Figure 1 (cartoon, rainbow, N blue to C red):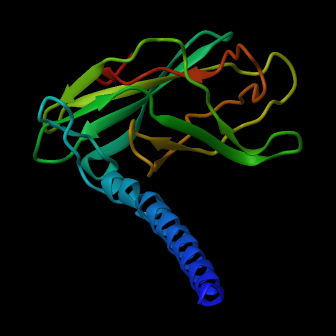
Figure 2: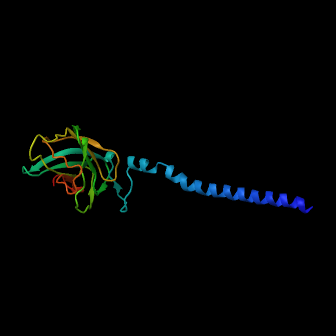
Figure 3: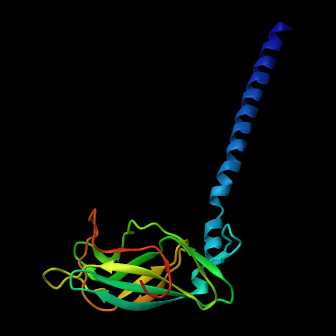
Amino acid sequence: MSILRLPLVAVAVAGAALLAGCGGGSATTPTQTPTAVPTTTAAAATSHTSGGGVAKCVLADLKATLGATTGEAGQRHTDVVWTNTSSKECTMTGFGGVDLKGPNDPTFGPTYSLPRSSKTPSTVKLAPGATAHTTITWLPPQEGAGWTPTEMAVTPPDETRSATVGWPGGAVLRQDGATRPGTFIDPVAPGSQG
């Protein structure tokens, strides 16, 4: 009889090991499932509430237009103006995104994604019809023809979708790899002009 018990014990140990292995596999499944759910995409398409109970402005709430270009020959400033076209109050905080688009540059390509300034962002509350702006500081080329964008893709803060606005004109000095570029964007500020 002791000869029969040895195979039964071996089968029981193997079965327990198999069940333990299966249990470990099912424990990892729940941790992988949430990362596959596209919650960020859905949140970006609709207004979402910030800490104060006022929804964050999303692209569907806003109209982007080109403001004035000011400055001297050495450095220029162009404002992208955001108007709340919705019927509800919303907020904007931080930096959006600005991509200058134009002809294909042999070194850098057709898109110049502008870096952020070191300014500290604050929250801007927009009533229906109110405006905020993002100031773009840019350098014209010191010599040569430079690179002239044709349009800008502008993205509000905390949003993934962008609007297209025209470029006000003038060549830009490309500084795609610079550590201290003279072309950059500021955080959103109240009003229509910086």
